[in-house]
Length: 73
Figure 1 (cartoon, rainbow, N blue to C red):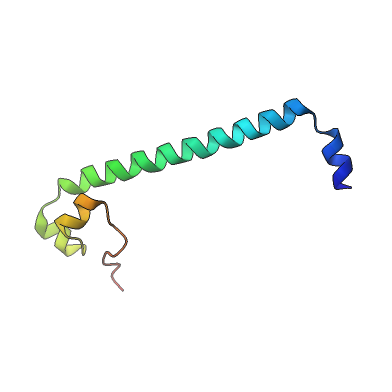
Figure 2 (cartoon, rainbow, N blue to C red):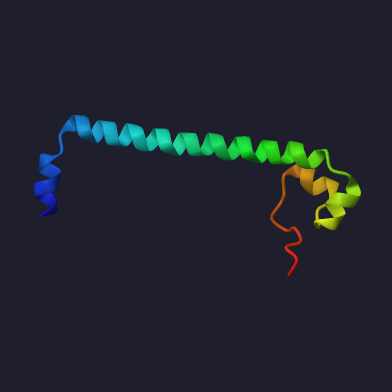
């Protein structure tokens, strides 16, 4: 059955599908980068006391390392 489906898909549809997939992946990477930079920028404006309260140091914020923060557990 899959060969029948593959034979009915035209070259244009394949091209369009791969273009849209690449576009979606690229857009996702751009959005991830944008949100990370905005988060770092927002956290840089917090005081050291506030950062300590949420379990981050100023160095972690400057590096963008948010993997080991205090989750409250």
